[in-house]
Image (cartoon, rainbow, N blue to C red; front, side, top):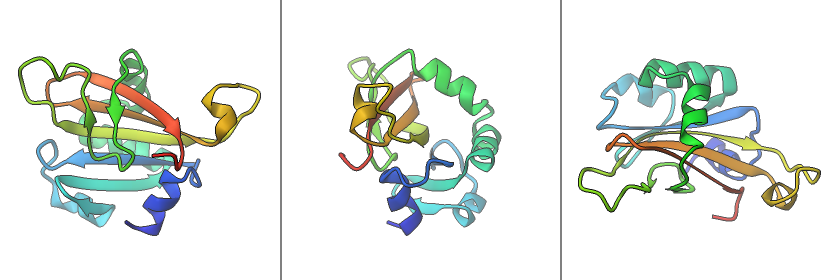
Length: 142
């Protein structure tokens, strides 16, 4: 794992976003220049604006619009951002993660809940079945 990815997962890069794009969804070898090849795809951690633009270019969807729709459904997204558990996995079909958009939010004791415990990773995924879902966790606890 690269230092940048480790820092992102630890919540130490709140101005950056993390993107995972599965090979089955995006077949563009050029993306590897911007990120880290991982089993089944590429993982990219870049500054927020560049990341949102890259997400839109790769998926055809505005990142924040996607996050807003994915927030309606909870699922489980792996801490390494490369997989997860689709909330519709009990239905027939392919349930592999196509892409993930994630960011870190700094600790905020005034908000309460998990935000009191530390920096929080917000992650939004789209499954091959079409379901969009979200997950969040305290950085470094997964």
